[in-house]
Length: 180
Image 1 (cartoon, rainbow, N blue to C red):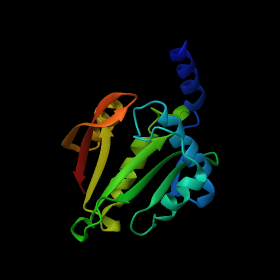
Image 2: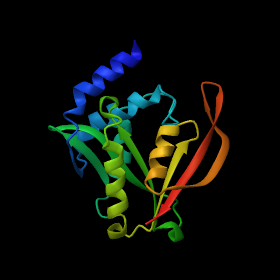
Image 3: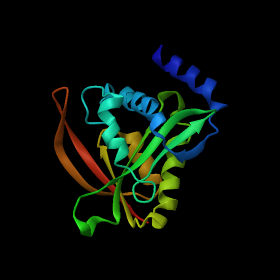
Image 4: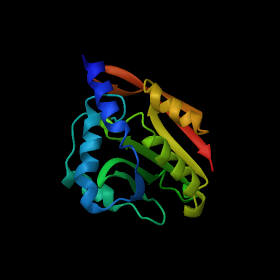
């Protein structure tokens, strides 16, 4: 039953998967949080164990700078369907040209190229932001994300075994990276 519902949703949205990428606005934060919260229960994407709120994420959102660590959304027919953000990798000066990236997509628009396009944009625009290396932190059991990043030239740079505890399961964290 679930597979049929997912297939129906994909066929309904496949025709509308045209989208543009733009800078995120503070007014986008409610849908950004909704997209993020939808991944919490899956235990595949985020290490958060509880849903968050717009108020809790506001300081995080405001830390982004369009010129250094941008935050982008994918928009379809005026609706945010996914997002990607750049974060400081580590606070030391020598890491200034390395950024951690995260990408999230509304479950109704997954497997339609949204995450791929957002990542391609990040790769293409990273040099103009002074970024020479991109890093992603992905749970080792999240094979779809690992495969996507690998198709875009990311390599597995490291593994942190059993560093996350999700519902009493210890999970590995894979570090992927790419020079740009």
